[in-house]
Length: 195
Image (tube, rainbow, N blue to C red):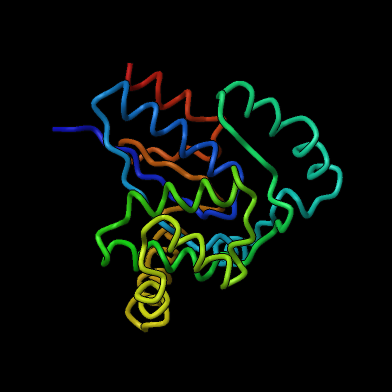
C-alpha cells in the first residue's frame, strides 16, 4: 500500500508554497502520495488564538529578509514575495473544492501557487483571478459559480474544522502515519522516516 502524507495548506502562506515543492519532490523520490487538504488559514488562526508570523514586526522582517531567501535558495525554487500580501484567500481556497468538481484539481493547485508566489499576482482581485484561470485553461465562469454554492462553502468550513480538531494551528501542517509536522522546515523529519 502506498504511503501518504496529508498536507493542510492555504495558498496565502509562502511557506506552504515551499512545502508544496518539497512534498512533490518526496512523492517523486519515494512511494508516497500527497493528500491535499485545503483549509482557511485565517479561521485556523482565530480558532487556535495563533497569530501569523508577519504580524510580529521583528519576526516578519526577519522572515522576509533572511529566512525565506535562504529556503528559496536551499530548495532551488522560483519565488517572488507577493506585493499584495496578505491576500484574502477565501475564494481561492473554496476554489480547491470547485477544481475537484471540475476535474482540474492538480492543475489548479499548481496554477494558484505559481500565480501567488512566482508571478506575485493579487488573487484577491476577482478580475486577475479570472484572467489567471482562463489563461491556464480553467473555466473561470464555472469556477466562480461553484465557489458561491453552499456545498463548496461547507466543504471548506468542514475541512478547516477537521484540521483544527486534529491539532492544526497554522499552515503548512503535514501528517504522516498520524504524526503531525508543522512548517516546511520540518519536512526533512518525514523524509528520514520514508528513507
